[in-house]
Image (cartoon, rainbow, N blue to C red; front, side, top):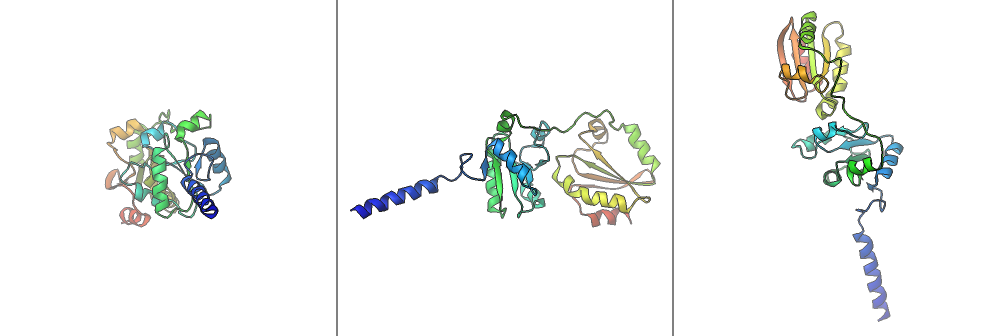
Length: 239
């Protein structure tokens, strides 16, 4: 009889531990309070910080160095492919619900180490931790006349319309920069931030990012919307 009581006590004790699965901040190392999240970010040299809110929410204020990958976007699965599954990922949203779903999805798809900000950026702000914003106003915004002059002044020019929150734009930036160096003196490459040049983007009817436009002798000879590999860009502007 005594052995049965001991057995039952042990069983329920183990069950209690099993049910405590880390959904309360501070009870494990994946669901962190705002201060814990901040400290862990500082400690991890290879941290990948992901904001899974919409671009509109992101532009209102985000944690510095965060990459915007919208959980509600149909491209979420493809967008997270730019991340390294072997390195720690830190995820947050507005109040914690979307980041919890995104974190669960990422763990099921091979990400080894995923940390969540419990309570989202609401708790981050409540803890008076720093955040930044995308600058939408720019005194040096390019005018349509300046854009047309830029096209006229260059025999061959590649325009790259982008936004800081755009995942494909971030993925393309390294080889856009490479092309700028490799083709210096042959083809001018100019990147235009649509958030800092809203009026120009509207006048040129740029309604999505990334977009590439290639002009030769002031004539647009090629355009492409969406992500594209470096070799494909070269094939279209060097022919």
